[in-house]
Length: 114
Image: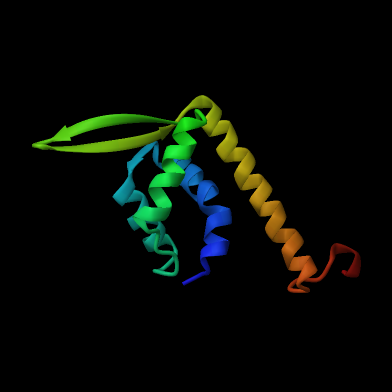
């Protein structure tokens, strides 16, 4: 498991990337996908996931659709056009950040050193 601080800084990027790859997903599905992709190293709690989803929806990056399954309602989230653009930008930004962190932490040689 990773610290809450690391997860907090990456949660929106994770959600946006998953929705970009999967068209639409519901909350529990997102938590299970993250758990599977991370081999159990990242377990999203409802207390972390749903506020992030609601914030992304409020800022116009996500849209929702309610689907009735018997007596239950399942809320699906999908990216808006703006959300899709933001997903691409956030993934690129995070990738660049990781490369910079590798250099700062001396985990990888700098291009100048090769």
